[in-house]
Amino acid sequence: MVGRKRGRIINIASVSGTHGIPGQVAYGASKHGMIGMADVLAQELQPFGIKVTTICPGAIDTPLWNAENNPYPDDAERMIKSEEVAELIEFMLSRPDSTIYKRVIFFPDCEWH
Image 1: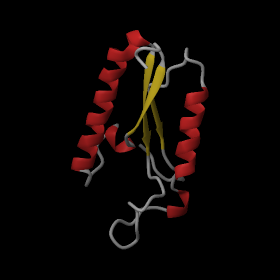
Image 2: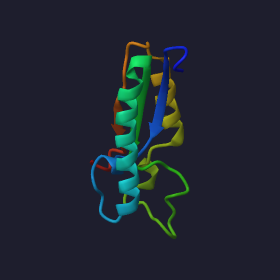
Image 3: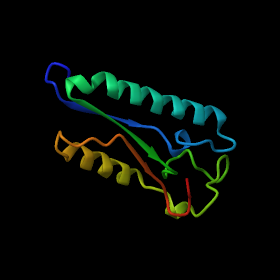
């Protein structure tokens, strides 16, 4: 990317990295750290034409959420589907090099962050 003077790096963090969520101390700390790292990386790579984006989704329908050990506190049918995240990444990669998506925060409409 540096040699070509262009490219995009897309990180997947979490809405938990944008503000604290009770019960998620370690997870939230790791996602805050990831967002901070991406912000610094973006500044370091800007002279090389490389864009850095951090996606911060709310609940995604993955095995992390399960009724036995970690039940989703709302309607599980409303969680974000992994395909939706993939489509968002595809969209961002299709944008002109002149467009920067620094941070994208999105979540199910049954949550509020």
